[in-house]
Image (cartoon, rainbow, N blue to C red; front, side, top):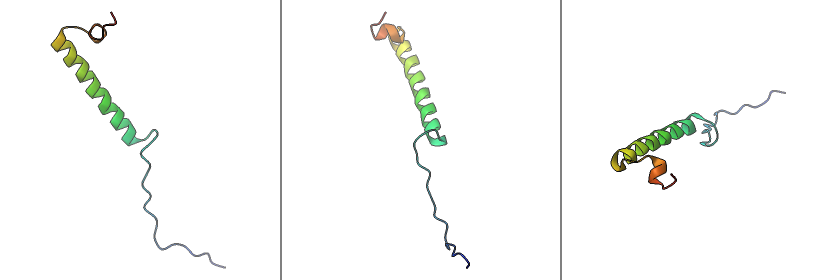
Length: 56
């Protein structure tokens, strides 16, 4: 008995959670924005992040 095969292959979209290319790109972009923000804070205030937050 021959098995019946589907005529179309479903287009499954990969989930956007966990360790995947999208998550890693988003994480890298967030890190770059954070580093730029820290540099700008230090340039504007003349203090480092810990001093600006009042921790030192």
